[in-house]
Length: 414
Image (tube, rainbow, N blue to C red; front, side, top):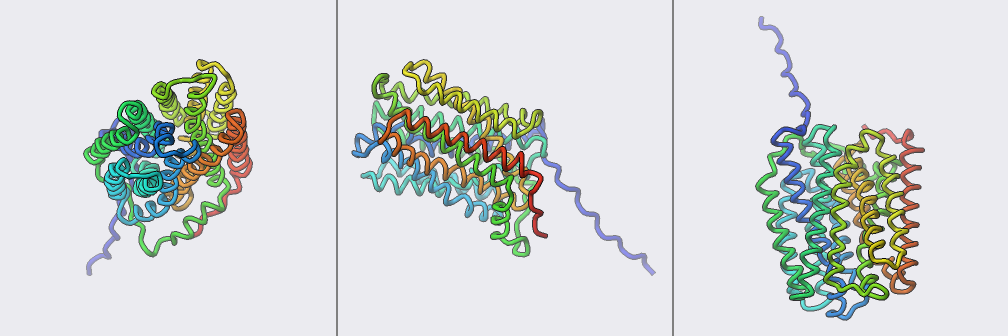
């Protein structure tokens, strides 16, 4: 009689790649390139708003809708992209997203009028939604937990540098050959970055396909909205990136008027301040591990407010310093909240990170337009005061949701 057969041993749990391994480097660089391609094509229009507004005959708030249209498209698409990625894989979803967005972005400069430009920019946003929706979830699956925060900071740095490049390419070109040629050049740049992602990204190791027997999608989404910690993170993204969008949308209009009268070509160079955000995003993840993530977020918000106070000045040098300080603060808090939306999720990591992206993109789109109405009607001082209030609300949400209610998180369903 044969002895009973032992059940096959379960494969060891995937530990994730660690820094120093070749696959870790390829993943981080590939995600950097994907973030670069995505955010260059989201915010390139921000640098051509005055020129676009003049040619198409729309006011500042109307011109800013070309940025909001793309971010609205992103906000609408992040949850569907997260669900698609649960089935076909994170890498496949990001590849489809980058290819379709690049094609659509190349068509934007060919649109004849303001309405058609808005529609096409919205379609670009719909196509681009996969990378913001699932990049952090992808990192959480493929990398060792101790390195996810650091890698997320590098990914956000790619977003930042992409945003810089898109603005710095489109802005000066808009003065020389027109805003349409400026946007076209950024689309080509985005195509190169997308190709870099295709070449470098390794095959997935930690992805587990979601099957029909898993927790339903509706449950995975709604559970996040009962968790005070997740709600606090979403509120931070919504308010802080909304504040960031307001400052970068309307500072150019402010500086081209009295008392500054800065030429539009030089105004576009202010987006170099984004580089300070790149450094801050790399540092904030590691700093959070040492002193606590809530402290880093609250400290970043305090730095943002300090920078905003400097933006009241009539001195161009002081305003530039204030912009740099504000940017450092924002990219100290935002990457931490973004990384924690995946790391701290108790259920539906993909849906949690997608909801965070939905939150900050919605904030960018809504406040980027709505506070523009304040700017058109009440001026720069009222605009900055509004943004300071948004920062205070973000700090309150983080302190209550994470610091006070953090121990009262609901248990995930079986």
